[in-house]
Image (tube, rainbow, N blue to C red; front, side, top):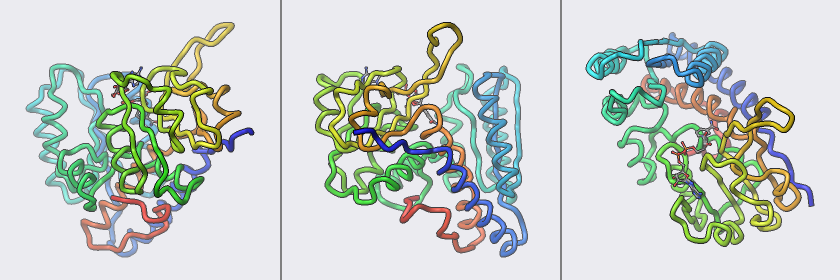
Length: 302
Ligand code: NAD
């Protein structure tokens, strides 16, 4: 069997187009554009690339972007004061502070300072609690995008065995909550898990969010399972240069799985598309405008 390759790029482009249509409707109803503020502290090259892509996507969606680039030595108090100003600004519907922050800044203090109703990244403890309680809030963009891709290939998730490898607050834990809400039987595996291969062999759905290239071997995958590879790892390419690979040994898994996301071009592009979706939804909630259902793949939470 050769797995169906899940085209995250195409899914993300389609979601972004639907968000742009919905934003046009919002602008007409509310008389203003949704606004997304992005805060970048320092010059981390990967973060700068992400922020540039986010700004481009914001403009393409018809939203207003507010970019705040601060020097690496910006103090925590100054950053918190900026968050306070963005919280109070009626034109700002979403606030994203790009992680990682420099070591002298307490990232958790900054995230906790963001108004939970503008926390489009879904990292604020209030939104973590809302997700765990099944209340509307904001769901972190990468797991939300992963769920959208998964739902597209497996519309009936109830009762399936799912393993999430990785327990970070950004991907693993919220992903496990989302799968639990879909009535999957969820195992969360992590660095101290004793027999990862056995966990994966039982699973109908495998979500890998680890950061170890090729950790999940093809012969661990249950035939027909759906594999969502969140990992993005830069490795050396044979013959020179570097390449991006996931946490799953794609060449080994593709012959066994029923469907699989490639790296790159799988989950990655969904993250920014879901950020646009969350910023639009935030604007709708704040102005009392009905959310256009087309921004969600059937019953998207948060
Ligand atoms: P993290 O470092 O915060 O967490 C990694 C998790 O993997 C930890 O919970 C750890 O317990 C677990 N782990 C480590 N080694 C393990 C092992 N040998 N066996 C089982 N579990 C192990 O990482 P993160 O932020 O959750 O990111 C994970 C991966 O996803 C990275 O490759 C990252 O680049 C990628 N990522 C992609 C996107 C995107 O697609 N847009 C977004 C976020 C993260």
